Image 1 (tube, rainbow, N blue to C red):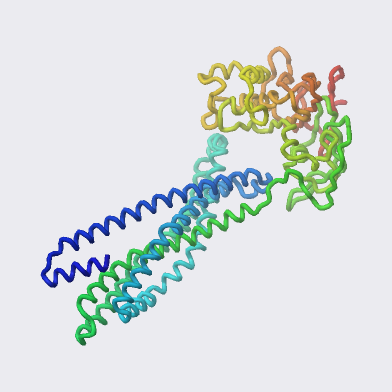
Image 2: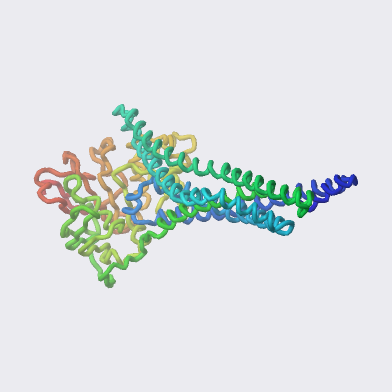
Length: 542
């Protein structure tokens, strides 16, 4: 293009036709623009695919992290890393693959053309750019640090907003909207302050490049005027050099902006690397001193022997706890709130790892089980009604047969007396749950139990952890037992439902949860016992 422009200038000076030269110049301009747009589109699509793969990898890794690590970082920070940081890496990737190479090639080409035309003018322009553009180095040096602070502030804002939305019912009933808004506002202001600093840095790049270009143009013009007066430089060469200097501003601005995006992308990559460096749950943990033992036939479903566990930076939750759970029957674990009943279940499923002691499941050391096999053998009904963001069908088949028949699912709903409710939904089993879910709190609890009931035929251990607080007694029975958890193993497999509770013990046996009384609170956690078919159920008095 510079040489074509030179031909146009020569034709005008000599009074020759310029149509051909102008046509060639226009064609070159359009061709270069189309090529750059097409290249940018192709590489941008490639960058988007890479970012999608990275987001999937980080998500998969996050979901496989130990529960303690996930809770320590919070949903807000993890969400910011998975969504925002991967997006920032994509921007940096696109910049590094598309904009930076093109801009660098443009700068090198312009400087090479200038050096070919007149090395002296090239040195003058380059020296002026370097001297005036020194502040750009400071801007780029701060970009990565400010980008890291911005990502952390976004994580805190996401966490605060997630917390408010998760507890929105409590916020509304306590008339806490103003305080919650103020808390989110503080996190938002912090993020806005850091974002403003990043925006100021980016906004300074354009003016600094423009200032350097103007200073270079002044220096080049003064030098060229002096040399033209001496007769050592032709006006044609000066005009071409001046045009090339004008062409240098655009690629140089893109180069500096791309370098800033690359620095921000490196900060995002560091945060993702930190997350990806965390160890995931091992299929078979290899703790110091761990010795895999052969499976010993046993009539126990679960056995704890001198088990001690403590959360980091806190005292022991369990201290030398020992008990056995029969492989068949209904067993109760009682104790005051905070005594460690839920921790016992987390140890059984290896959501947590014991500090000392031995834990066996079906006669095999819990550390000898492959994680996938262990958890497939435990049905989990938590204290809170936890539903998957999907349909009723999706929630019922979680962890079990991926393609159950409709009759099997309706039977599970029948077990917890929820069939009539689901049948009234227009979509039936395919009714969406989650945001704006059509189920009440108690119905969500029943659906969680229906999920466990659906898996009952193949599960030796079922966990129910203070789950029935929202459920009313079943009409005509006076109890909560007909919720699909048959303690007798009548479906062809030994079954050991292990249940806990901490509420007042005022229910008629057989009870699905049992709480603490002064006599039960003497020990932090106490195994009460089990009931089997044909035997009287264990009560608090016994």
